[in-house]
Length: 332
Ligand code: AQP
Image (spheres, helix red, strand yellow):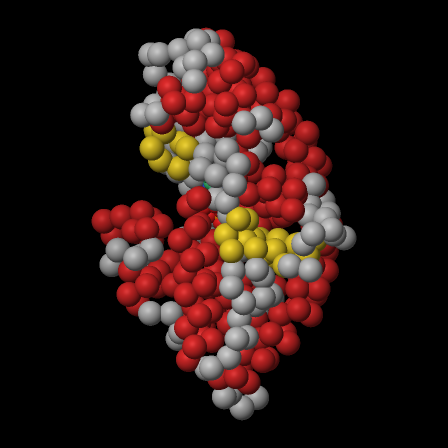
């Protein structure tokens, strides 16, 4: 069976972007066609400063988000990265395979470093190489991600190819990003040209999975839109980033296509569409956030589940790491 790997950073609370672009799809892939491995990638979170208490809380909260949305720890392997040291070990080996020039092309690094590229951590720069290790440590072939991560999955292929070429082997497989559906890029509610992020400046830019119904309604009401009503056809969303984003979110939450949403709301004003969107979001998110809160009341149980997941992850990872060391000529 083909293997799926994906992860989420505990760099803050989960957003609607993480839910629609990642977790909801992870749940869909769970089952007979794939072996699924889902990680809380805590070692990626510390590429920018994390207060230790916040990191501990967010690690458990991301795990709770996975579980609440329907990741079944019997069907999937669910764990946090720091518990499987092979990630860091293979990450180092891949730092020695990846080229500085490749890292320089990563647009997410440029976005995150901004004007301050000299002052960010070396880890933030090397992040895609650790991500390649996360994936290839399990010989995963399918990686469900949002649009923003596509370039990193392509880099994973470059690293696998260079390793295979340099060591005259076919040990590491080709990895495919799986990017599909209307919510591959959920945008910031105040600026439809920027991605919705956990760590964005203002809380009004994003819907958090822990927001209550009133907060969700308020955020959609205040979301930036434009002066036009919803268009009659999909083409009418061109050059309307905020309108397109709100339609995308509606489609993803209701499992409709954008065309179906447009057909239902053709010509509707924002005064009608925004409350409908808020009601839909509350209806879909409330069961997940309620279950997250219930799980968070017992952190020891979450830790126990992640420790068990880490044991299973280790069983797959250790032989692959050992073989990599061997291919490279390490004496161990
Ligand atoms: N806005 C988004 N739309 C669609 N998918 C998204 N993802 C994140 N934001 C959106 C997807 O969620 C998965 C986990 O992402 P991550 O937490 O590892 O890193 P990120 O993409 O950097 O997420 P954030 O929320 O923007 O975190 P911060 O602000 O801390 O950097 C990935 O599959 C991602 O595509």
